[in-house]
Length: 119
Length: 238
Image (cartoon, rainbow over all chains, first blue to last red; front, side, top):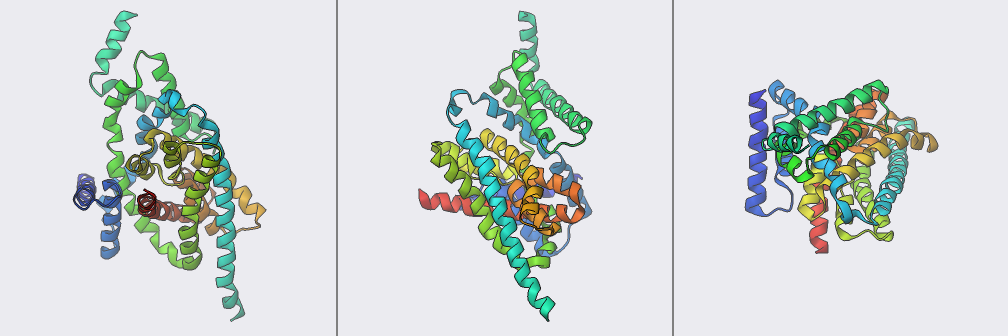
């Protein structure tokens, strides 16, 4: 557990350092994730330690997000007149992009499947 | 009354009270979620959040003081984000099952999800900070917060938007597949993960393991890809 967690922290430090030193406009934790993913792709395996630590962290994501998330209710006047556009964007935007995703994937996977069936 | 607010003040000097309140609210949210038999419209992050807000309103504890202590929990979002590399790696082989549909849908679908939301909100008069906070709406929340903070949006608003998008995506995915006469669980799963990140992925695993696996893959790919293209895109606009 501790070994897995330490490795994750080391990759975060690596990502944070890369962000700080190179000025790449991607936050350190996301860079850390990309670096760790690259490292796993090279090694082609995950140690059980690392897998357990990651499961533990990811399983608690909702809890970890609560302190920041509830800040939403304390934005006050900042959100005046902004709720309608936000809600419309979420509901209509998600509906349209999901329709597009299903349509495109279905279309492309048919194209791939058809010659196989014909052959 | 004065003594109570003095006590609350004392307990908030350290992370003790803020962390305890967060844990209690979250567990009540989980309990409610289980009692109601896992409703897609009320995941624990939403119910727990509402309970926590209620607690903060009732107690003489203002949000900045609460957050100062609860940061102790938020800090773990950093390693949790890095840890997302592991499920992405573990699900990555599914990409071979339908390489072309997956890459094409990811490359077009993820920017579309961001772009459509911003376009609609812009058309209805949302200001810039709100538009930036909407851009990562389909990205898993820890990455979305990083993106919103990095690009000049509002982190907490991004969390709320992401949670709501996850709920909406969970509810709409299956009806949309029926409407388009698509019975491929891999397509349903990938669409859920691309649009509704972790919340929809949790729902997808309840539908079937295949749906869950493709949703998880889509969530990881969309998070990583959006984290790359969004800052570059905003850099170009500036």
